[in-house]
Image 1 (cartoon, rainbow, N blue to C red):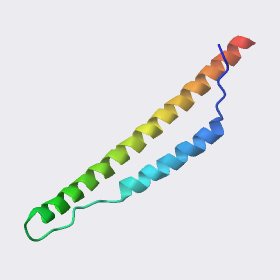
Image 2: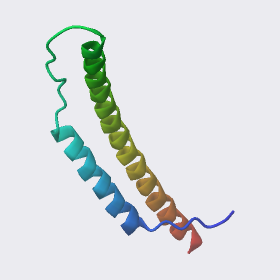
Image 3: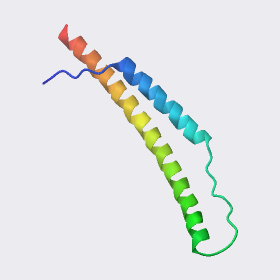
Image 4: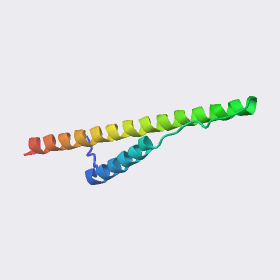
Length: 89
């Protein structure tokens, strides 16, 4: 079995950057603009606003899940590395 090298300092820094990004996304609010009038153009503008809100929410969830995954990877790597070091001696 090969050795897996992970720079935990770099991983922690990137987790921090993602966490900051997630906080910025969560702090921003996306509201659909009020559209007056009728017709297909107005409906499409409303749909565009709703789609943008959906994308905003999806990106927020994606970043949060990525942070969680990367934190789990880091913790697992550190635990396995520690266990391997204990078994090596």
